[in-house]
Length: 231
Image (cartoon, rainbow, N blue to C red; front, top):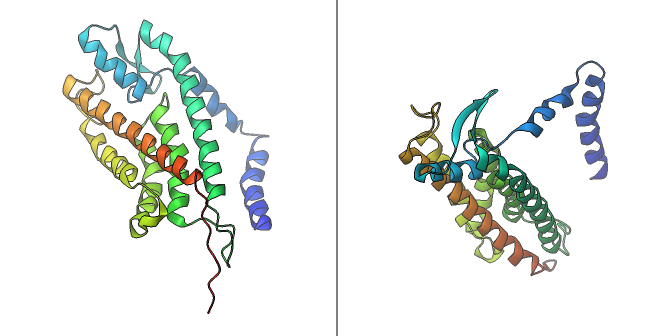
């Protein structure tokens, strides 16, 4: 409903516009433009693991978070940002196209998509954003869990074409977080065992992204047609 969407947009935007005169709320984003490889990200975890075999890397507190720094990290930041932005925008485009292809074409629910398919397609860009981001804090899993739970509803409809392996990987990756954060060695630099758990968590998120990508491609390659039921 366009009226509802317009009202919801106004409800969100107008308070921000009003606050902008006295509270420069947008400045919170400027500090993130200077961030490097946050310690728990895919990029930092791989670099920190490689430091055990001699690659120069330092686990360092930067302002209010930990980053993996060093000459290799400095050279990795720019290409990592390009990969992250490209992958995220590409996944948004693919998910949008797949959702368009999966719309019900007739009946009283024409123009809609089933809940499990919608959740799965929304999960693709969110998981891509998290998996490839230069910043990956534990709370990011809270973005993934609700959509992953809704995606699992596809188990009741095998014909929906949704692979439920990705949601299970996301849940499992969330359960691994307490193994390395918080931990006795987090402030000084994770030991090898906890680093391996961190890397494994990030590999699970990568696999979930790949699985969701394949699902979206499969959904985009087919068009769902539902005929209106007749008595």
